[in-house]
Length: 383
Image (cartoon, rainbow, N blue to C red; front, side, top):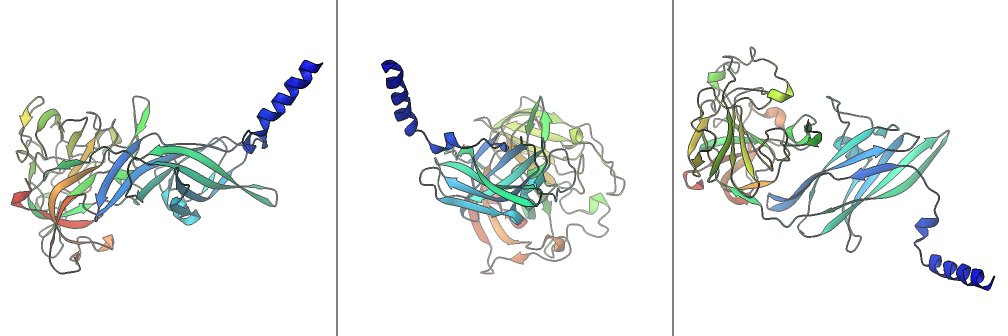
């Protein structure tokens, strides 16, 4: 009996030091995880990180997201905070082809939260704190869930030469677009990936901001059509595809499924598990073959109008695998470009001239990614 009492006393002492959370009532909620973490990329002089938070509701009730905070694990400081409205604009329901305006996650359902945040620290670990609510009858209960740890990589950024010459080129992308490259998820070999996480579509403009001379429906009228495409780095060509045809007009362009989104393309292994992809290339313009070594600045193809596209342009991105769709997009910067301005209202794109940089003089930018819908030139010295 004495032994039992001593063991009971020992158990009480040990459990007294256990985190109070062990004594809390179990509440089914969400599983939260980050399947792929990227390094930082510099935009407008500020480091930024892109990633996705996957949420699955394991409870018996529909759950509403009220707030999300990103915390620095070291000191619990708030790195970023997103309210309900912010989260609604960042939510996507897997498999849904239109923007999901519903912030409720039904039992057994999943959502993806697309996150882009500025952070000037590397080597730090982040954790996510969600404020969730459930409605039971006329009562609304709110509770917190914390998890999904992520380390911001210290891996050096991939610095590249120019993929095109001259300009002006509009660097078309926006992380908030619901069907933009940033938010298109492909499932290949049983795994979901976002190859175009950092993709940019380059469309050539004239000095008035127009992308075509005359009828916009005629492909050859587009200023960028047929422009030389350049190797951004020394490397080895890993794959090419040149079996897509082009229509003469935008109106006659076929609707291609996801597996044919790339059109004619080239991929180049530039080392360190980095593969550069060039898509929508002009039929018959590809000048390289798989296994061929290329030098930075070499002409490898021409801008075209093939695959899943709404107009002639160059799609460019860098990924971690040789597969065009079965790879994760990774950040990259260009060694040098000249910033002319930007389209704050993309509704004016192709109709009006861009808003020039504030000081009225083009800015030479080094080791950065062009900002969303900015207008740039790649000068002769970029390569």
